[in-house]
Picture (cartoon, protein in one colour):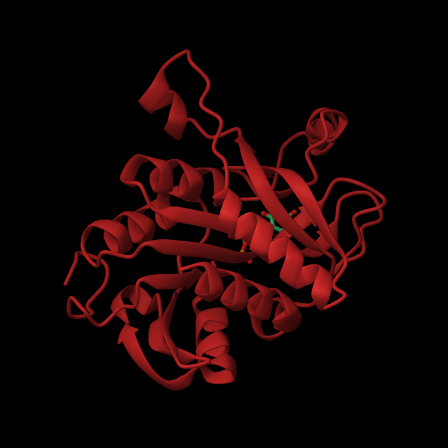
Length: 236
Ligand SMILES: O=P(O)(O)O[C@H]1O[C@H](CO)[C@@H](O)[C@H]1O
Ligand SMILES: O=c1cc[nH]c(=O)[nH]1
């Protein structure tokens, strides 16, 4: 057991999907896993373990934002020995050509968070995805005919920005969209020598203002989940 996860050691698989929303974790386990067993209920941050295509796999909600996600990522790696962590999240698009329901495979994650400034001081660290996972996820997405974009994302500490137009500077430098956890996932994966990838489904659009419903964010986006499961388990 760790402070925020009440699973027994050995109950969580080496490969873990990480949605922010704990109810998306439940949906993933019920939809894709064979014989899922709930391994965590601390703080309602649900986690489940089962098998997919005969291989053990877990899913663990992380909550929203890097302070919350960092707790679960740290404990999964250091208390449960998890080796492959794939975030399956939602994001806002910064570009006309990146449409709602498209996938973004986060090759790297920029951030406005102070967490890495605390670690690195005035030096800038570039948090990046595991290349093998990224490559396989891109291939699987292509095979499935899913519209997908590979590139830099913005991991923000803020969902509601005081200055809405601040996104434009990131868009100008090629950042594809905004979410709230990938930079911390990639940094912790590098620190502890495990593999990580973030796959995002575009849930809303900062330019066109098209958006998906809360229910869609909770229980759909199944293409993203299948890409994550296939890429993670085939390369493990
Ligand atoms: O859909 P999830 O995985 O929670 O991801 C995105 O959605 C939340 C904000 O609504 C943040 O956690 C952001 O990163
Ligand atoms: O963090 C997020 C997630 C979805 N959409 C956004 O605009 N931001």
